Image (cartoon, rainbow, N blue to C red; front, side, top):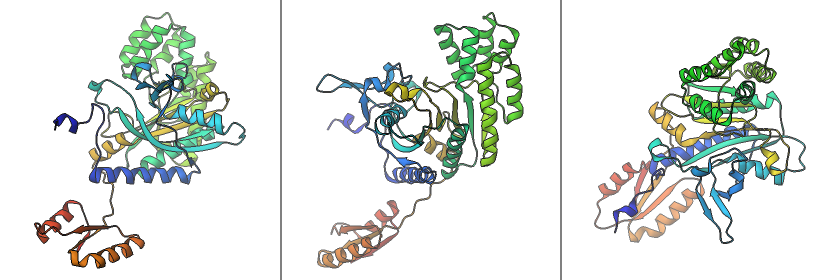
Length: 394
């Protein structure tokens, strides 16, 4: 057999044995958090029509999509992002609903990124979307859930950085930047090259007040005191000032939730997803070069599907979170209660009867007909390798 058949393509991997068990336990923990906040499960297809993730919607670039055709010649893509799928569903199935809709999901996403980036091309995401609520209270609820998820995962040290799409958008409007200049500035900010941002601003003919705001793109603020300085600097730019006021109001509600210490503010944060219209946020922890969590407000996305509905959501990248937990040596405890029954052919009836009784009581039982070529020690060694709690011989 060609050994090539045993390998996976670049960017995807097998998950098995205890790692797979830990992943499932982690997913269940986080899912329970979302359910406790009143969110209802939803599943969307792994592939959709190309237009669901098209340029107009502002999601993943076409070159990074896995595209293929159905029998009718329609262009389909493996979903790179679950939020547009949820938006499509909400516009279709909740078109008459006038109260907020809370949905949660879990599934895999597929992005055909460059292999040299070292990123997985298939990743598991667990997330929540709150539709039909434009309030700052909704923003705070999603951030509270995000904090609860990371704590439920076992993390003690993490930070969620929060920005606002209108801070960056307001700077673009005030400076009158061209599309090419916007792309250059986005790249500098995404790469955390704020020295480059300063150099970029020097090439522009900007009023001193606006230049000062450009200089704040890389700033972090731990509380509302720092934000007030940004608000005062934005006095001549209403769109930017409104964005900062929104963050100040959000901070006050986060204090009520008791989670303000987990949140810092980065007003100039940008996202690869262009559909964000309000707050944007990302969760960071030690041992992960990328965010373990991302989210934001997308009040105009559902308009692409025929429904005008304010919305906000976030997603936890399970694979990234597991890597961080591993590097921080934070264990995901597994309950090993499996019983192994090894039986001779003459004891088959007793073994099967006993196994079925135990399974009916909720016990995991593994049955093996004894191989004459194997010793009792072989089965005990096997049980240890598989973390089986108990072995019985019949």
